[in-house]
Image (cartoon, rainbow, N blue to C red; front, side, top):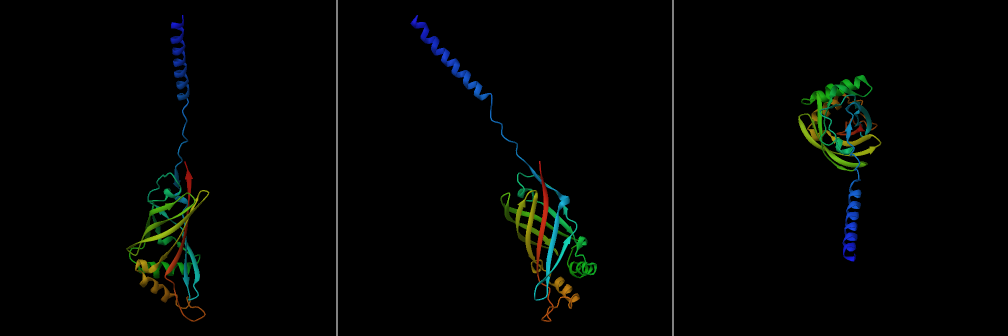
Length: 210
């Protein structure tokens, strides 16, 4: 009898062990589905600040229209703007002063080459889902220039800040044209008329999670 009992016990343990392994593999861990992010092209806002007088007094404005060529999906908010192409109609410029708007459109942008639209592409981006930096390849006056920018992410909004210099786009003639037209308006307490070359830009766009 002992000869038959031992093999029987051994086989029982073997089949019991195999049964336990099968039960464990029947319940695999289910991975959470990856979220995708996409910007809402209807929510883009661009504000700019130029400066006049030697005291560098700010003059603010915005562009009321921004066109996006394609809106890709990505695995993070910041990657949702990488490679994004945009164009800004100069006709949408608004400073809440009709006379000033007309001068900027005709005597500044109007002096440049092919500035019906200001174009650009978010060339690269580095950072996480809270903050980082990148480069925009921008085209104005038939000149393309890389502009560095910083970004922050808050809730469902990506905010971007940057600064550009008019000289980078070879637009000194346009700047002079505007300053000549606004000579007295751009005089400070020292009697010197000046229009600054640098312009600060603030932009934002909302994104959705899918």
